Image (cartoon, rainbow, N blue to C red; front, side):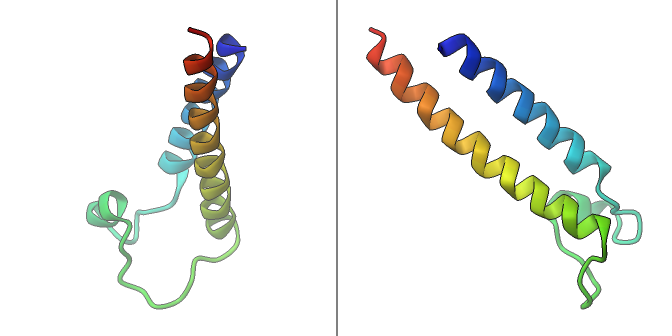
Length: 77
């Protein structure tokens, strides 16, 4: 069980890194890539908005799996 959770956590972490790096931040500059701020007032269109939603879903999944891993590892002592 711990091994399966470990693999899932690593896999989701790698996917989150890939999605983060694939987001389009060329127009906002390096500051936006680091802080997430944008200078425009209009929302991201199309694929960029979907990437943001996907990233948030993977983030929530990562947190839930991490907590599950903690509880499973505590009970295996």
